[in-house]
Image (cartoon, rainbow, N blue to C red; front, side, top):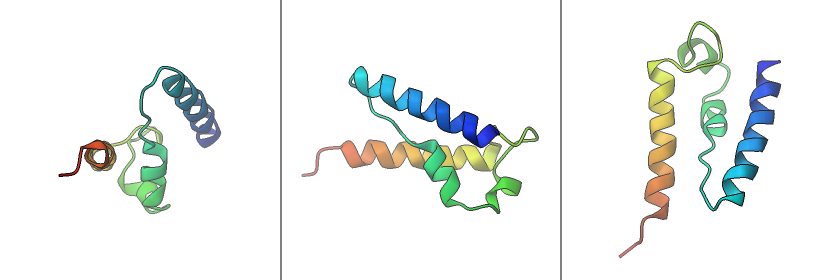
Length: 73
């Protein structure tokens, strides 16, 4: 159920940010890339919010998005 809720929120967030000229970093996609094993290593006790390892995945997701948008010399 929580994945379905997260998916709904993702769709709303993407729509609203695009409508306002902002960028979306798909944390969902980055977390999902780590596979089911990450459910035991990247999430907190509520099985929804990330733990320290999960936040490192978020950091990499934002960093990739930022560096992909930097001008190339």
